[in-house]
Length: 338
Image (cartoon, rainbow, N blue to C red; front, side, top):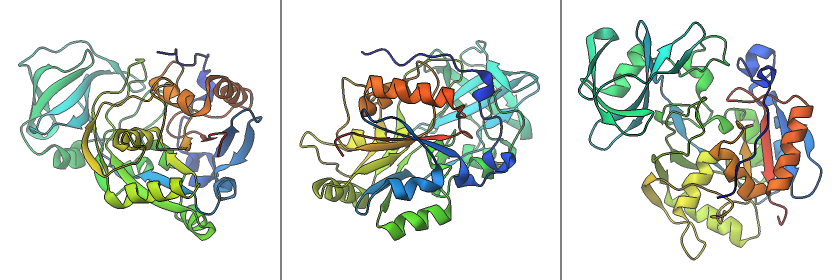
C-alpha cells in the first residue's frame, strides 16, 4: 500500500474555534482548489458554485452529530458507533486541563458509573483503542441529556452542539461531525441549485477518530438511497462531475459501486478503505478539509488527486497558512480528466 503523505503540521495552523468566532460566516472559510497538474488556486468557499458547472452533482452526508462525549471526574467516555445488538463501541479517555488523552485502562466486565445514575459495562476490546460496551438505558436519549460534543485539545473551549451540525444534518448518529459539509450555508446551497448543480444525500455515521493515532477507519453504518444512486449514474453518463462533500461520502459511494461501475442503492456496514491501489470509480471530485499527516484520509485523497499534485496542494496550504481540522478551511479536488 502506498505510504500516506507526511509533513510537519504547526500547532498554529489548527483551527481552535468555529469560523463564526473568528468573524467569518460559515461559508466564508478559505478554499484551496487543485486539479491535476495545474497550480493550486486560492478561493473562498463562497466561490464553489463558480468552480462547478451546470449538470454537476454534489453528494452530501446527512448524518447529524451526537453530543457523544460523557465526562466523569477523571475520565471521559466517547460513544462511537451503535451496534445492531444494542451495544456501542466506546473510547475511554483521561481528562486533561485542555481536553482529553487516550486512556489504556479498563477491564472486561468492569462497570463505570456515569452521570445521571447511569452505568456503562465494558464487555471486551473491539480494537486496541475501542471497547464494546453496554449502557443501562437508551444511548441517544442519554447523550442528549448528559453528553457534550467530542472535543480534542486543539479546540480551546467547549462549543454547543449546533456548532457541530451541518445544514444537511437530519439523521442522528455520528460521533464526530461530517465536517466537509460544515461550510455549506443555506444561501450557498441555493446558489449551487440556481447554477444547475444537483444536491443528493447519503448517510454515513462517523465513529470517533483519534487525533493521536494513525489508524485505518473501522466499520461504519451507511446508506446510499435509490434516488441518489440513480442521480450519480445519470450525471456520470451525461459527462458531469460527481463531487463528494467529504471522505465519508466517498466511502459510502465507493462501497455501493458494482463491478459494472454503476452505483446501486445499498445499506449496512462498510469497511471499504479507498487507496491509490483500489482507486475510485463513483466520484470525480471531493470537497474535504485538510487532514493530519499520514492519515488514511490522505490515502483517499492520493487516489483522487495523485501523489505529486496532492503534495503540491499541501505545500501551498502550509505556505498560505490554511487552517486544519473540523473548524478549518477546505480543499476542492477535481480529477484532471473532468
